[in-house]
Length: 93
Image (cartoon, rainbow, N blue to C red; front, side, top):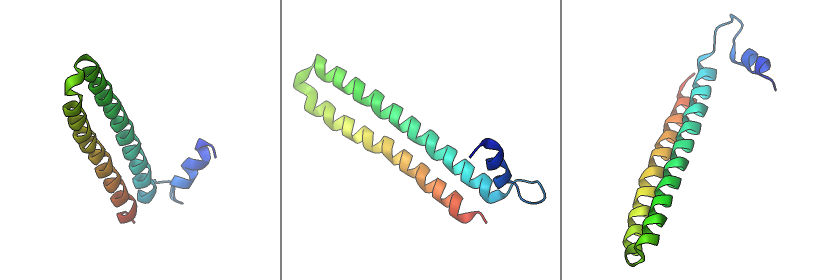
């Protein structure tokens, strides 16, 4: 499917954009951006945690606990984005 066919699917007979199509596009953009941001944040946190563990191996268990807590908080933001995207998809007529 090319971009022209996708645009024709988003337009109604009057030539204006359907609200549902716009909501689905916004939801897809939101969840994609949240997933990208979450993946970058988790990768950055893990990289720094392993670097700190390599420098001071005796405190690696404390660093690991902090890493897991931070990953939970990062992933919760991605889940919130998923919930908002689902609300956008299913509430717009």
